[in-house]
Length: 315
Image (cartoon, rainbow, N blue to C red; front, side, top):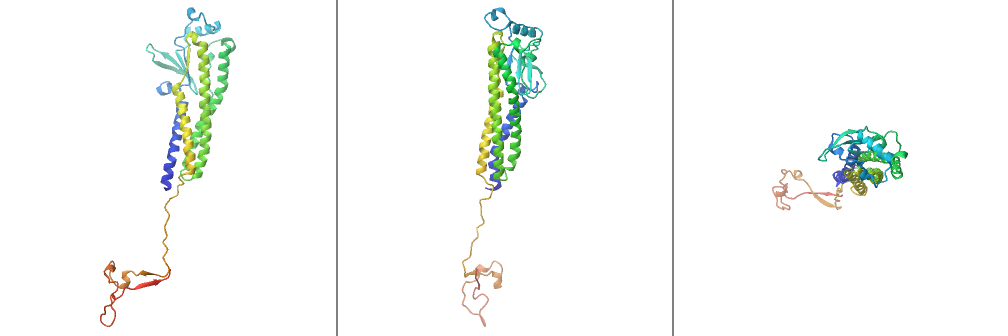
């Protein structure tokens, strides 16, 4: 099999690792560029505020506090409340929706490590705090989201760094099983962090969307999860788990050493070996025409072709 077989054995886990890295890059790129459609479609959480209303007939049987209603109404009338808000890993983007339902991103906030979406700040609900503005359920949900978002961001950063390291270390796995063993260790750590990040983001934004939706749905503010972003995240997890399995297989298989061994044929002791034709004075390649045993005589003795000489050799 040799080195070529070893390379083929390493190719599969390496390709899966690269695929996992691409998924993480897409996660990091979500909402970073308002002019890129693929990035605009990648978000963890979306608040749709286009249909926001303070119609008394709609709000008659709701429990929303008047302070919250007044603050939202002020934001809507002043133009601070946009039609939608999409939350990524680094920032959020906002924009408008036309009559046909087509969205256009008008602004993306600056990138920030450990970013979290603060509706009071984003919607510019002046002179209010979470204690004054939100009901207990929503306030607790936002506070939990704020705390856990730091860990989630850290997990994603560690995961993408370990994925890059896995690719670099994986190059050395082409040459030996020890390289595969080290790569398997790195891959296992990478799987732990990307899995933790995926679980955290899914649970965190799922809870946040549920909180927003239950509290603000009466005023026609709807919250939802980003299915495309979460699909990319969990696809990256699947690639990571698969690559770890194949890295482990490469530790046990495909050593990289050639399977062909040189065969040495031993000669039997006291055997006879035919002497090459030049020894007989004949032309090269004519030995097959020389009689094996010719007892004929010529002149005063035996001719050069009378007997075929053999060399007696002890091996």
